[in-house]
Image 1 (cartoon, helix red, strand yellow):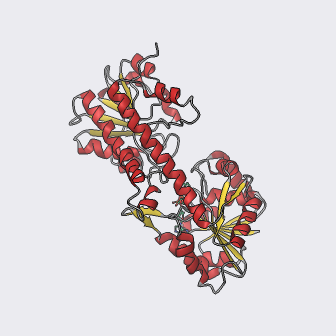
Image 2: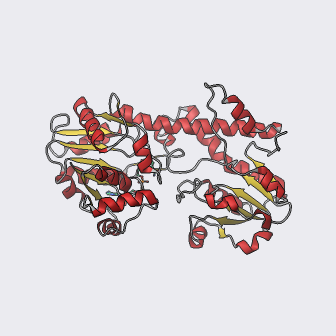
Amino acid sequence: MRITVVGMGKIGLPVAVQYASKGHDVVGCDIDERHVAAINDGTARTGVDDMDAILAEQWSAGRLHATTDTSMAVAESEVTVLLVPVAVTDGAPDYRHMDAATEQVAAGLRRDHLVIFETTFAVGTTRSRYLPMLAKSGLTPGRDLFVAFSPERVQSHRVIQDLRRYPKVVGGVDAASGERARRFYEAVLDAAVMSVRDAETAEFTKLAESVYRDVNIALANELARYAHDLDVEIDDVISAANSEPLSQLHQPGAGVGGHCIPVYPYFILAGRPDMELVGMARRINDAMPGWVLDRVAEAIGGLEGKRVLVLGLSYRADVREISHSVGISLVKGLRAAGATALGADACYSDVEIARFGAEPLDEARLDSIDAVIVQALHSTYRSFPWGKLPAGAFVLDGRNALDPALIRSAGLRYLGVGRNGVVPS
Ligand SMILES: NC(=O)c1ccc[n+]([C@@H]2O[C@H](COP(=O)([O-])OP(=O)(O)OC[C@H]3O[C@@H](n4cnc5c(N)ncnc54)[C@H](O)[C@@H]3O)[C@@H](O)[C@H]2O)c1
């Protein structure tokens, strides 16, 4: 097959590489000319070693090219997959990039083309917003134009592994489209394909998965705050409760970041603000950085004039990704309270850390720090020099990822989220 992938970002590029690895000719489209040039001259990187190895292999085999001319690429291919971002602006999905991309796809359509949207949408978007745009080509959906939605369930930085592992959910705007999309995925993926009734079911699936995570993390956070107040260890409670198969309590933490979980609930709430649990989970999780800062303030006698280090600014450990990161909320909150917000992140340069609003950490000055908030415990921080902090400094483990005994043995005070770090008796 000749396949077009529109949007060569963190997800689109590895997806294109996966298709190429199955022996298909793939053309990636992007509006970023430098990125297109890098893909064509073989210098583009995903930042993940095993993915880059497959990328290099497919590029050498001549199966992966890129262009800024989406309409032309579509005209010369049989299948188009769109992975252009849809973010949230003012509490609602912002479709401007996808609209622009879809207009270009429509201009290149030829008979019997299959178009699949993989970017997360509000339910009904494929049919009500994009089908009419594609039908402007003069083709008739279900007869000589096939359109489906299939959510991208992968996580950035491990796209290829996830693509090979999670079932690919797919639903068409009509039966023929659903069937074509199913056959397409069977040809390009190793994972099972799970056909669902229609595009709406497939769109809903991704939102349901994201909201499930958000609501359950919010529950874990509320329970952790309750455990904190009662001086009970939340870890003990979670492992004891989850020994019963119907209980699947999640892990609490300093808040929820990244571009999926804190974003997609708004794809529901924009149209259904009455869905109380969905909105409440957002509020609970968004309140967690404030709860963390209150605990730090309590422990070190207020924040004004204090020097507080946020360890790991990216949204999760070992990932260079800042979108909706709790690290940024913590930095903002510290500065608003009159503290000096120091930042350390092995994934970012000092210039980038300064751009995030934090003062880059000078390790020689660790002895001047009043408190550390662990936001993302990158692997390199497993050997963080805790002993260089002043005796009695406070460590707030926002990911319940540290060994409290290790922190205490360095002469420091420890608190997690619902975790007082009591050594087991
Ligand atoms: N990143 C994730 O972890 C993740 C996980 C699951 C699903 N997704 C889905 O994937 C979508 C894309 O995410 P991403 O992380 O790859 O985004 P990204 O920002 O890394 O990449 C998007 C790419 O699209 C390009 N683009 C923008 N407008 C375009 C246009 N009109 N034509 C062609 N290219 C255009 C951009 O230049 C960029 O290279 C998200 O909106 C989300 O729905 C992302």
